[in-house]
Image (cartoon, rainbow, N blue to C red; front, side, top):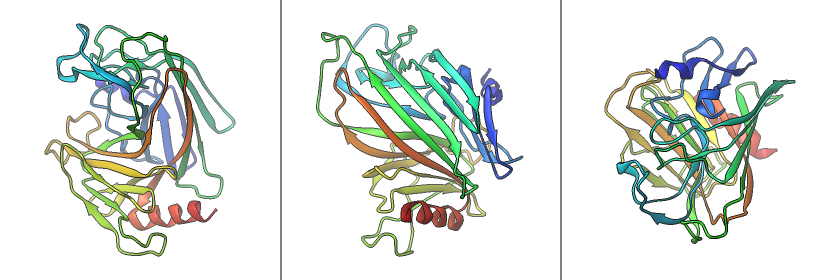
Length: 284
């Protein structure tokens, strides 16, 4: 069952934070926690986790789509598809304090083991000076057929990345004021589904528990964000249907032979600790 997401094929633990990936989940991040602590990542299906997800082309209707995801654009994601098929991991290696994965993603809306004409690569390591910071470098390579069914389209919101956390991290915070990087007041983001769209002027957001402790994501190139909560449970279970969601966004149009790379940071700690390390990263 879904507990297999807790079986890590590669993990890093620096005594402050633990991060891990699983082959059965496309080599994507299925585990983020304090060292020795409970997992903060939601793994209820293969569209959750912390993972690359991209959109291109036109919305199409096909016979091999999950009904809830039709019509749908070309949407390769690292973990798997709506029917629970895992994306094939081509390479998974861990050495020298870094995890590397190369995956051929599945198309999210398809229920028939449809791999996308794309690769996703991921390099995970710890920041050498900021011990509660995980650095993730992502690369996306497309090699779509020239006449495929989706065609080409304009820019779309891209999740940079998609982050799903456990429901007990129930309050989302970000800086949305017009004078960023001055330690001004933070805002709580409405826990809505469909998700709330907002502009994090410091390019980070965090979801924390009732003790203001949890996880943050900082994507320097992001220009907007989606976040919210699906479901009503307040459980810390990683397999609950209820989940917190944060996705830094950028608007990009991916052609049939595009490549795209970016870096994001995952941070574990109190809200004030998360913000302070983001400031340190930003100032560098």
